[in-house]
Amino acid sequence: MYQHVDQSWRTQPPFMSRATVSLLANRLRQHARDIGASELAVVAHGGEPLLYPDLDYFFGTLRDNAGDVTLRFAVQTNGTLIDDRVIQTLAKYSVHVGVSLDGPREVNDVARRTHGGEGSFDSVIRGIGRLRHQEPGLLDSALQVINHRQEPASAVRFLEDLGFSRADFLLPDWNHDSISMSQLEPGTLGSWLIEAFDYWAARSSPVYIRTFLVIARLLLGDEEGTDNFGPEAVGTLIIETDGSYQIHDALKTAYQGAGHTGMTLASHPVHDVDKLPLARAFQLKISGVGRQCRECSLFPVCGGGSPVHRYKAGVGFSMPSAYCVDLQMLISHIARRLLELPAITGGVRDRLLSYAAQMPAVDVGKDARQVSLRMIHVV
Ligand code: SF4
Image 1 (tube, rainbow, N blue to C red):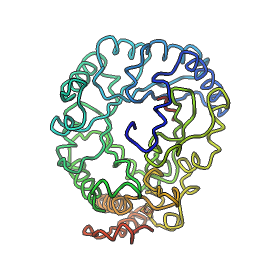
Image 2 (cartoon, rainbow, N blue to C red; image 1 turned 90 degrees about the vertical axis):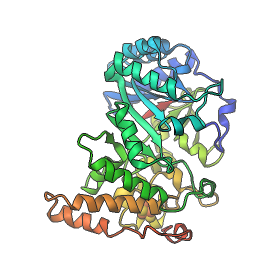
Image 3 (spheres, protein in one colour; image 1 turned 180 degrees about the vertical axis):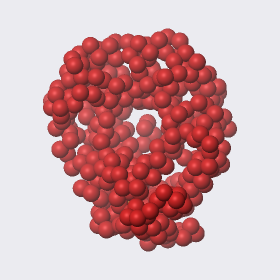
Image 4 (tube, rainbow, N blue to C red; image 1 turned 180 degrees about the horizontal axis):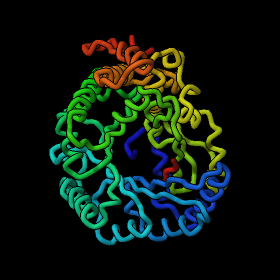
């Protein structure tokens, strides 16, 4: 996040103050009441959430002020700071741990280095191992941004070997203005994901990979998606360290202030953010996509992908995804694989056949990108 277009973190305090944590606790309780929820999920991420000077105070204040609302806590960490003291605090509040990983040592240590200049891989593995040994129930999931230079099968095996039961492969946060810097050809990540899917689908006890399972579920007729797939998502709200509300942290890749709402914990209840058009575009996707996505037969599964990937300066978020070709390839491939199952018959089979027919040619070439252009987080 620190290297993206939006540099507003420079004016944010490094940590949420105690006064802001108290305000947050009150707003959470109020929000649960406003929407009639008995449970809310709170994910602390960053930066690096385990750098917070007093995690016990943070989670304790939220829990102690929650009234009869159950708060489900999680942290999304790079894993380097998981030590016995941290584990004790996480266990005290049942904080589930998601780890952001780049991949095996040779991949991880290229970009993630300690202040001393050494690769961080060993400390990440040590932290994960310690957590798995002491509090296995808290080790929740791994997120890995796809590095297409890593062999797909080894990426799947790497996640399995670390003992994660849940994981996800994420498309890098490029949009139409920035994707040329990635040097990715249209279809490169689609091919990568297809190879990973086929390897994963043949495993005897595979790790739960969210993207694959969400697409399969949507192909079979479900409507509840994620930020990245499907026509509807729960939606995500980011609360910055100064108490301001942001719509989605990945919007920092679009332009300065893209996710800003002008609202804060002090000024507005959480519920008010839901009414903003960009927040709606993350929840009810049809409200944010352009004509090409609206008319696309894959929309019920794709949902136009992440709004973040649809951004283009001067146009906004109504373009098809910068990964349109890749998404078409993956979705239609999974539809084809599901059709191989004998239990798939009748209307579901007909629907899958129509999705499977959308498979674009893999060798799409450079112009195809143009042709085909048709929870609460605390940081
Ligand atoms: S046009 Fe592309 S991005 Fe839009 S819904 Fe269809 S496959 Fe997805």
